[in-house]
Image: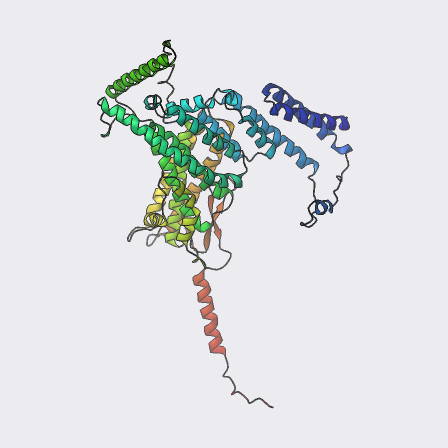
Length: 550
């Protein structure tokens, strides 16, 4: 029974990979259930198998590749192999849910990002890449160009006018290829993702310029019919195409920063600058979303609808003349106005929560540096400004958002004269409380996918833990009132340092107070001074030097 189960496991796995390659979702789901049953049979017959697995000859790698030394191959044990297959099946189930639950580009990007956070193996990521190869029937949702056009319309209702531009088909064809590269980006491992983002940014820089040109034409058309685009208020958005391109660009830049934490590229002295920059990027994304979902006055909306109808009639008339005079019946656009997303979607709530969480961590570090709890020695080579310029040099490849400098960080991070460290601590407390509320609200959305739910739980744990840490710091940094009997029991920050724990969440740490392994510099100096003083007093008068005998 054990031998038969192992043979059936190999056969079912081979058939499963073949079904996934041919995009037969129903057959793949049935084979996954068969593989799970076969794994139970294999696990029940482990006691009949050999305890010591078959070894490997250490000299084989040296024969195949002569320039490397021989290495010892250590195969995993039976339990680790079983867990590996169960994890693989879980990730393959997530891949198969793409064609049944995802209906638009926004959810597709979010889902791919969630799968990437779980770090699936090379097999699951390879099947994801195979699923992205078709553009005419993209994941069973239709043409990728139509999906992108629908995404533009949901992001900004003013896009209906820009969609009638004669150059819009060319622009759509140029957008689809970089978007495919973004989806394929999440199928790479974490280190390659960070390198690939810097290669994708020039394409999105060109798309930003093309989108601004199309938006300028749309603004000119709306100005001619009397819509005051130069004024503020409830007028149509001036950037219907640019807002969508800008959102994808900022998403890539924020992902580049968070990957620096996952790959442990940031040193503790750079955490404050990284979270400050991440807060800036997420703020830009929220402002851009508000600009795209701008409320339009009914008076200007009626003029815009009339202009869209006029442009549509002219376009269909020209198409009929080119086709030999045959007039096409105008197709009614179903649900275009109702398909616009509400600004308070779960994704936007999570972006706002991450922004508040970044602000809370940055302000906490700012206060701790002002109190002297967090201090870093000067760098032996280079400077913090040079590290900042090299760390965020990739962001200069795109015109928007504007790349920040180290001088901007110093201007916002240094406390002014007379400002107490309690002020940034209060700002951090409000930000962490807001993040907790937003994460709780987002986790109650019924449309959340499993990766998003897991992300919500992890961020909520980080927000609560950092809020407790902040309460301890606030209590320890308060000056006791004179004559207060309870002040002796209050904790102090002397002899403690801050530790950053990324085990709960890979991008946002949990801050903890731990005892310093060595004595503080002041105490060390005092002890050294006392030792020198005692040695000087107890030292006997030295005898006169004697001449060396030849």
